[in-house]
Structures are given as C-alpha cells and as structure tokens.
Length: 197
Length: 197
Image (cartoon, rainbow over all chains, first blue to last red; front, side, top):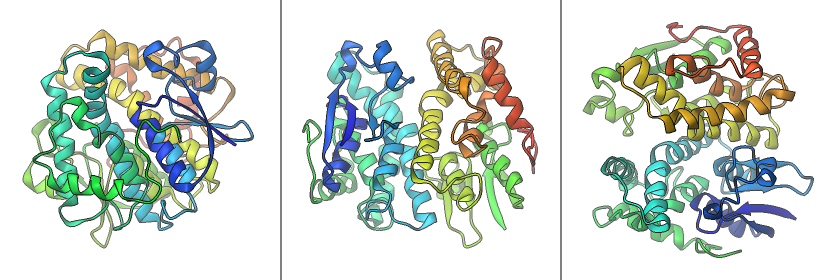
C-alpha cells in the first residue's frame, strides 16, 4: 500500500489526499506535525532531506517529495492527466505558477494568520491578490484551468485557494474563482481538507 | 520558428536558451528588460498575464510560460527527458524544489545584490544555503540529479547555482556541487548565460 507522510492542515498534502481519494487508491497516512518540528527531525530528514511534507512512499520503498511531482506521478495514465504534450505542459505551467506565484503568499498568509497568529505584511497580501487576479481573468472564459476538464492543475490551485479566507483574502470580487471552486468541490470523490481519507 | 520572450540575465530564461541550444533548435529572441518594466506593460501582459519571462511562443501562436513547463515541453521525446514515469516524477521533484526552495533565495539574492545593489537579509541567505546543502548531499553519490544522466533537472538547477556567487553565496564548502557544475558545463552544446543563441 502507498504511504503518505503528511500534515492534515497542509494544502500541499491535501492535493495528494484529494487525488488519491478521486483515484480510489487506499493509502496509509503518517502524520507529521509541522508546528511541533516533526518534519525537521533526523528521522524525517532521512525520508526527505528538504524537511517538508508531503512525501509519498511506494510499496517498494521509493519516495517522492513535492506535491506537484507526486500529483504528476499518481495521475499519469488517468483522466486527471491528459496525454497530449502541450496540454501537459500547460498543466505544469499552472502548477509551477501555483508554487511560485500563489502558494508563497496565499498559503504563507494563511499559515501565519490562522496557525501562528502573526500579522502578514501588506506586500505578501498584494502578491496573493495578484495571483488571484491572474486566475480570475483566466477563468472568465473557461470552466477548468486546462483543456476544459478537471485535472491535477485544478487540484493544485484549489488546495490553497479554497482556504484563502483563512489567510485574510476576500474572494467577493472574484466571481469566476468562486464558481470554479464550486465546480471543483462537486467533482466525484471530493473530500474536505481535514479528511484523513 | 519558435519565439522566446526573455531577459538575458535571467536564469529562468537561460534554462530554456540552454536546452534550445543543446537540442539544436533555432529560435527568435525577443528581449524584455525587467529592470525597465517591460514585462509589466499591457502589451506584454497580453502575452503572459502573470507578467514574467520566459515565455515560449510556438509557430501556431500558442504560448507557454514558466521555465519548468517550457523545459518539459521542449525536452519531451528527447534524451533530456527520460520516458519512465517515476524518473519523470523525480525530475519534476527537483524542478519544483528549484522553484520553491532554491530560486526564491539564490536567484532573488543575486537580483538584489548584483542588479539592484540592495542588501539581502540573513534569512534569505540561510534558506539559500539550506537548498545548497540538500543539493550537496544528493550529489555525494551521483553524477547528475536523476537517473545518472544529464536531464532538464540538471538544467533547471544549474541556471542559478552557477551564478550563486553573484548573490553572495560561497561554494567553497560545496565540492560535490562544484564538480557537478563542471560536468554540466562540459555537456555538448553548452552556452553561457548571456549568450543570445
């Protein structure tokens, strides 16, 4: 059986849990509490030298880190990852956008506000809204991010967007994003972020 | 012919120029000066709504942003991107690592120090060294990052690591990284960062 090292409040971990649920693949969940430093112990650094969850461990012991890489691996050969080369590259474009231009602001603001109770500086909030602006414009003429179907690009962007309010982001001015969030939540096999399976 | 919107000092752009050179694919270079705000004009935002280079434009007008996505698209079907699913996921793991845990510190420190003449805070430097530590340990028993061959994972990590000194990073304590930098620079078709083709 697959093993997932994860922390339930993590959107990066949730991406993998959501896809595993929608693929109907059972997995063993090993929880590591980030707030307790459990991803920085020598034991965990032997699992992922970069000290981050999620980490997927295969039956044969091979391991993968980075949510985007794990999604790509698990979705290969399924409808969540279309075959066409350009379509795949477009999906990766949005997945890299999420990790570079979205997560460092929207996820980090949520972590500081909701989990650490620390204030978030205005620049971080502005950059987060810039990412939301890009998404809102893209969704003006589309139901999903790539190829007019639900893919791992949507899963990657949904994870922290649907809890952006926990970081102080107001989605009132983003009707296209809100409609897309509802479409994603209505997909078969959808599970909420704190669900263990 | 392919068109690449790019800024020569950019390591993200360099990744694409290096691969195009090694693939022997000609391209038209359209330079956009980040320091002059040329990636934030309405004209450029119509090309990439996220306002960043590099952007690859195909002969038929379709466009791709995000260096990692562009590398993946161009390398597909070539020796720079092995076919095996797990190997591909491992490469993506390192490419996401680069964009999330490496570039925001090592590339940003270089941009501030070398191009803006601004000081870089200690935390950014520390995070950059943490990324270098992860790379150094991984290379202790390997010639290249994934599958013992030169791939786009090496290209992605080489781009900003080989100019890390411009951000104030000292690689003296990183012999494995230095040996790997030399191996990458010795690959056929290698071009320096400021080369136009």
